[in-house]
Structure formats: C-alpha cells, structure tokens
Amino acid sequence: MLVLRRKVGESIVLDGVINISVLAVEGERVKIGITAPPDVTIVREELLRPATEASSQASPVQPR
Image (cartoon, rainbow, N blue to C red; front, side, top):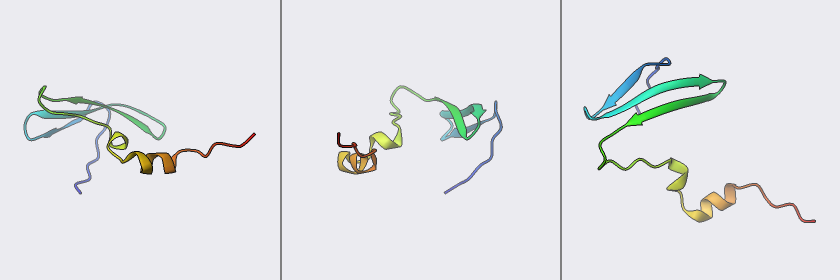
C-alpha cells in the first residue's frame, strides 16, 4: 500500500486520468473529490462487501 500525505487543495493522479483531490478536513473526516473518465466506475468500499458481512456489523436491534 502506498501511503501519501496531502493537504487541502492538493491532489494525486492515478494512471494519468483519475484525479483525487482533498477538498476539506473536518476533525477526523476527510472530504475528497474524484474526477475520472465516464468509463471508470467509482464505488464506496462498504457497498462492495457481502450483505451478510454488512448486516453483522450493523447495530443490533434492541428488543422492546
């Protein structure tokens, strides 16, 4: 894994066509922007996990 440090307003470029920019840092949250060609699919990692794994990590429902 390549680890990079970036400040707000700085970017990295992947394969010469995908640009990832740091838009804001608010506490422990980082807001990023991604510019990529239309044929590149961008999906949040948690949406790729199997449904069973996602449901096991969800908060348990409290019985009434």
